[in-house]
Image 1 (cartoon, rainbow, N blue to C red):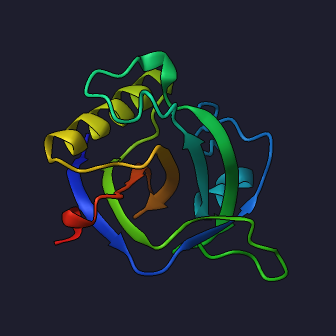
Image 2: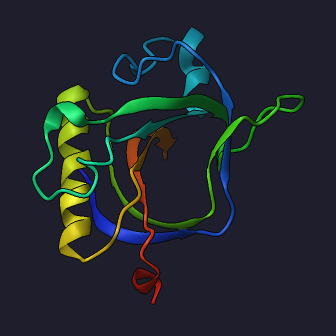
Length: 159
């Protein structure tokens, strides 16, 4: 399994999505036949708000993750683009993030583990992380990828 070590990532433009309700973060599966292969061009975004008491702890409670769902959405194609005629209703705003990714779709237990590890690594790096967690599913080179973003709010981390 290919995994990107956590790193600071600056988004210079927001990644925009159209809200879609009823998507299950942990129910997403790879397309099984030609009729659903068009899903491979979609990106899915889930934005969570982690309990503020847990979002800055080195030993957070796993049951607090991924947190309260704030937004779920999808886009067509690459770079968070949205279909013509759609109204963008959510985004990963431009800014500095602590980021990691795994080149596969993760189940609930793995997502919680990765989100907590990202938080621990951020704190170890002396970053102040916002209590928002963005989990993004996309396909790169025909392979599924799960990405984790935590906004960095410590201005010193930008240096």
